[in-house]
Length: 76
Image 1 (spheres, rainbow, N blue to C red):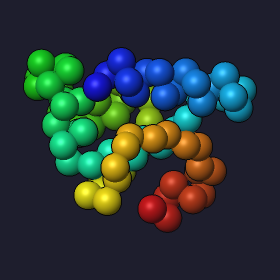
Image 2: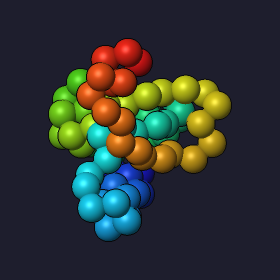
Image 3: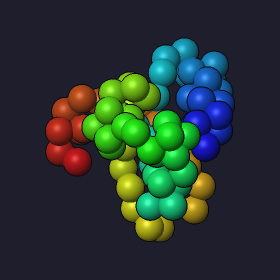
C-alpha cells in the first residue's frame, strides 16, 4: 500500500508541479497502510510521515490524492 501511495503522490507532483496534501482512503486501505509500517505507528505519525492529511471514508473505492488550500483544510 505504501508503494501505491508513493506512486500516486509522485504522479500528482509530476502532473501539477507540487506535492499533494490530502490522501483519501477507506478503512481497509488505512489498515493496509498501517501494516506497511509494521503496525507500530499511530494514525497521526503516519500522517506526519506522509506529509498529508488523511480522509477515511467507506465510499472510497481506490486511494487517491489531491491538494487543497489551507483554509479549506481547516473546514474539513
